[in-house]
Image (cartoon, rainbow, N blue to C red; front, side, top):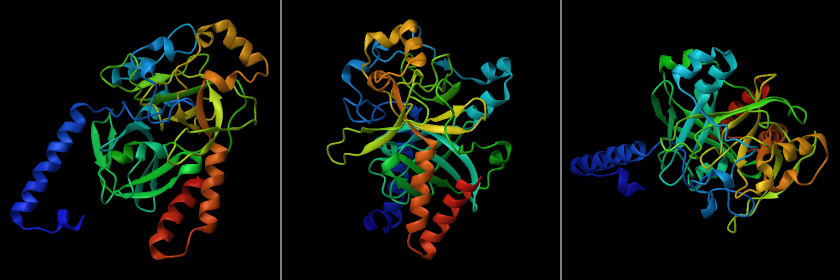
Length: 335
């Protein structure tokens, strides 16, 4: 990496040209919604099944596909505070190899903090040596990750810092992590950049009747990420939102509190035909059944994220370098 940063004028010019070529290439296809995102238990989270691509029937929950494209016009017509707030805080995350979704958690200790799934940042050891683009589509603003605050692989969670004095951030009312997840059947909403029926990789809203928690209240199951190189059992709750490849890292919002109740990590594809039946889904909601873990999407509950962050703050080494990061995490937990 020293060879790339320490050179003469010609070398610097060449590097600058390569950087902007990469930037244009990424955002010509961008929208941060595509490959190397959430898969299912049968495949790695960042490698969806081949049968899933462009086949809504293999990932659809309920009798209709209900992911709606979010635009400024859509938000004006809807005229709903929470929907607009979630849209303003939802970001596209793009690295050299991966794409996904993230969400803004506000300014903490002088840095703007964005959360996403850990597997979206695969092979990003540091933002100083790997370019990570963070795009706020509604505002048409793009930033780069200044620093990687931390990756908590045990809950597939990551935090990044943006360093900017842009007045744009003063217009956003950031999201907050809830203290705990709501009960089974509670109304949820989520926004992300899933690519199903969305070739332009726009932001889409998921919030139909079945975008809710299907697993029993307080029940968390640890599901393998099926990663041969780094196998981890991710604490999960089952949800019925219409997620597709590119939605990993999206915030799951409790519509009652307006807070983040979890983060999407697997779309569980391909799905059984049964989950396209509303009658079957109604039965799952009214009864206790192990079937909820077979085909519905998986999200890490906010309680598990909080516990992992708390454990980390309690054991992190005391140094100038790490103290600042710990203070940021502690402030997020206190909000």
